[in-house]
Length: 386
Image 1 (cartoon, rainbow, N blue to C red):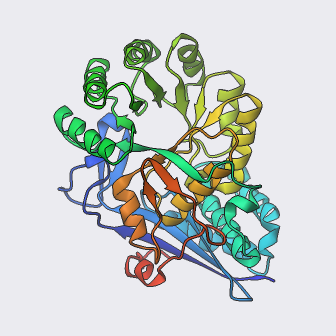
Image 2: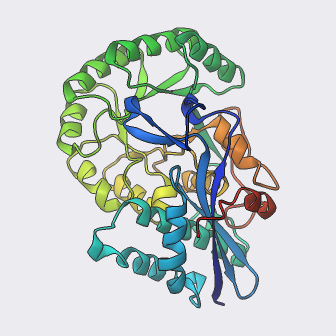
Image 3: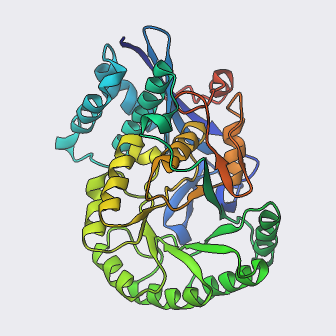
């Protein structure tokens, strides 16, 4: 059994709602959000990869590629495809090592290179599952839970009052955990949190994403206020390069510190873990792949740390892989849920993924348990990419 084809599908889809409530106007696909230190797309962008075996079995993967996904497609097409063609899909660990090493001497042990590797890794797991007729969570050693608890992420509304109303709507649908996308200043952040806490009551679980916007001193002051509101974790309070700052913050904060969406390998997570600079790790399967996320989770488990996988603009393969991995982790905490992204992801699937009453349903089919509608994918394929 050999791999005979590798195809890439960088996608750029115009959504009904801009991610995190961004401004739909302006020229070009991209705009800068100074408060989040990052560039964002006005479209929903990602890169899917399809790997085919000589017996007809197919596996799908995806890289978290919210900006210029054609870069991931180029890397897979020109660097990884020659390694994959003719190889057994069951040699995935060997292939992962070869792909990782292929650009080591150029310093590309992160960024788009690892994102591309993650997409291929997910596709190989999906392919193996289809060949064996087993769902991914069984290939990973079994499921610790029949459904995966999640929190609603973002509340993309322009005012505090509107965010409170949206949070109440989700609570009415039995989603009782919410993460606020803040980082607008300590006082404004606390005003938002207090309002949401009052709107949802003491039974709701609240989390905060500060988008790397604070100094240690500011983050400590923020954490003091968040503790009074019974916030479950403070995500990305400091710049991710500042391991020492996170260590100091964790020592002083009464609120658990969460981070990890910017990291892609166990080697990048290791300093935070060894220096006791984090409470909850948030690797994203679209940036780590399934194999590496399991390594990261095992490393976290040895230090008695929890894992709450990050999940933002990844579509069908990313969401499905995240659900399976979350089910298979003994030290799992909670998974992210992005409603507008989830609906868009389902538009590319023949059978929808299910998330209701605060939980994801575990896909039951082989591999990732999803059936990609390739016609829909090709309709949104950015054809100039490769």
